[in-house]
Length: 313
Image (cartoon, rainbow, N blue to C red; front, side, top):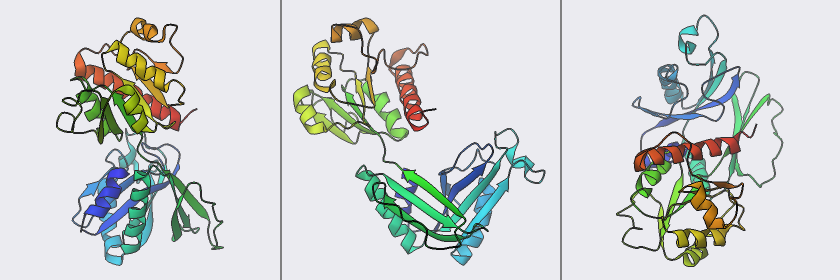
C-alpha cells in the first residue's frame, strides 16, 4: 500500500484504485489488498497471482471514462470463472472496488501517506448499498471515535487499518549489515543503522537505511526514542558494545530483539540464561553460509515474527 500511496502523489497520470473489499471462501490475497491502474494500462501491485489483473485493467477503462466507482465480483469457483482460479488457491468469491482517483480522493490519500509517515494508524471505512454501490468513504485516525453510518441504505461496511511501516534498528555497520538493510527495506521496513564508526555508518556505505546514527550506545539510545513496535538487531561483532546496548534496552518492551552470534556468546552477554524474548542465534535455521544467506535467514525470521503479530492465531 505504501508504494501505491507514493505513486498516487507523484504521478500526473489518471489512476484507478482497485481494492479487495470482501472475500467469501478462499483467495490468494485477502481484504485490503490494493492495486493501482494507470490510464495507459500499466499497474502497480497485484490483486491475485495474475489471474484477474488483466480483466480488472479492462474493466477500469469504463471507470476512467465515467470517472466513477464500481464493484466487480469474481466467482472463482464457478464454471464461467474457473480458468481464473485453477491452481492458485482461489476458490472463493472476490469483491473488488474500482475507484477513480479524483482530486478529493487524491487529497485523502495524501493525508494517509503523511499520517503513516508520522507513525499514525489510519482507519479506512467504505460504505456500500445492497448492490455494492459506493455510498461514502472516510479516513480517520485510529484513536478517533467511530461514527455510525448516516445513510439508511448502507448494507455493507468495509474497514481497513492502514498501519505505518515497522521500524528496524540495527546496531552495527559492518559489511554483513548491508544485505540485511537492503532486504529489510525492500519488504517495507524503515531501517535505522547505528554505529560508533562514522566511516561505516553513513549513507554512502549503507544507502537503503532511512537514517544513520553515529555514536556510542548511550548517545545513540538518547536519539532513538524506542517504541514497543520496534524491531532491533544487534550485530556489532563487539562483545562489550553488545553488552552495553543490551543493558540499555532490556527494560524496554520491544517487538523483537535479535542478536547475531552463538547461544553461548549471547548467554555470556547476559551472564545467565538467555531471556525468552531474545532471538538468538538470530535468523531461521536454514543452514545459511556467508553474509547474504545469513541475511535471508534473518529477514525470514522478521517476516515470520511480523505475520505472527498480525495473525496471532
